Length: 181
Image (cartoon, rainbow, N blue to C red; front, side, top):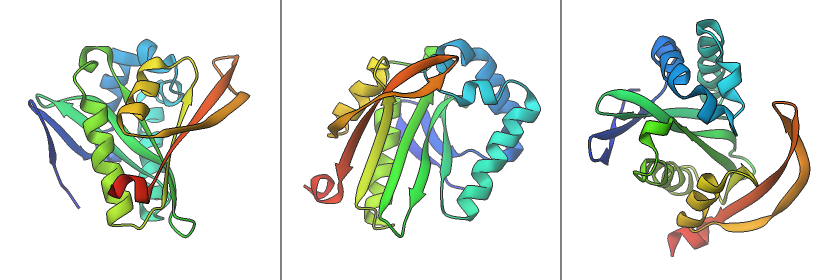
């Protein structure tokens, strides 16, 4: 199913699918170092095959209703995106994530796109808890969690290795009744 949601100011949110691997790879090349500072899939999409594989994995997960990925296009150029890294509909839980290349930062695109995903998850899918997992060093992403009205649940100390370095991971969340109000 193809859809386009306007984010205003010439920006659109659309599904990101395997047939767009070349465009996704080109976008990753432009923003790889910046995106890869905190986001693992910048390294997973290190070549066209890796980019296609990543998008195919999300397409398969979309079909299984366990994850989804969407691109953000600004003036018809892919500049970032938002995703459900995980969806557990039976448990009423979903984890939202994001990425953006440097040229598109500071425009509110991630906040607006994430609002659309959260609203859909809560209102259409009955998700009760939306999570935002973020490196403690990723100030921009933490700011988005705050703008979305999320609460910091805590810090998973030394939780995962990214590019050879152990990182603390902050867990932020939003519950359906909080969103409704």
